[in-house]
Image (cartoon, rainbow, N blue to C red):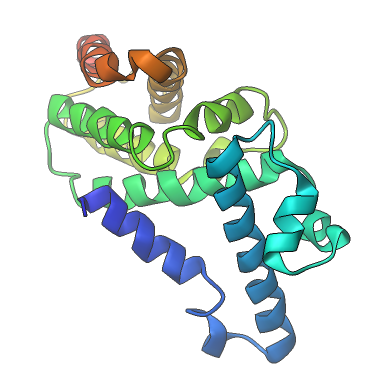
Length: 214
C-alpha cells in the first residue's frame, strides 16, 4: 500500500463513525454511523456502474436506509463526490505537510506525482466525475476548505519568505493558479490517455516552477 493510499485509509478511518464512536453522544454517533454507511454504499455503487448510472434506490438499499436519509446527508450525488474529494485531497495534503523543507521544484513535482497516483488508483473511474464536480461547484466548495489548497499556499508563503518565489502576487493566488492548471491536466488525461498522465503533470509542474521563480 503506497503512502497516499495509507493516508487515505487512515483519514477515512478517522472520518468513519466507528473510529469516532467514543467522541460523540449516542444520537450524534448514530447519525455519523448512518452517514458513513450511505457514503460507503454510494462510493461502491459509483465504482460499480459509474456516477451517471448510479441509482439512489440501489445506494439506499445497500446502506439499509430510507431514500430520504440519503438526501439528508448528501443532497445530491455531487455532495458524495465532494466528500470523496475532501478525503482524497486531504490525504495528499497530509503527505505534503511533511515535505515543507523541499525546494519549490521538489515540492510541486511531488504534489503532481501524488495526484497522479490518486487519479490512477482504485477510484480512477470516479476521478473525472470528481474533477467535473469541482469545475461546476461554484458556491459549493471554497478554496479555504480544501486542504490541498491550504498546504500548497502555506508552502508558497514560506518560499516567498525565503526569496525563492515571486512576491508580486499573494501565495493563495499562485496556489490557485497551480492547482487549477493541475486539475485541468487531470481532467484532460482520462481513460486510455491516463498512461501519459504523470509525464504531462510533471511538465506542467516544471512550467509553474519557472513561472513562480523569484
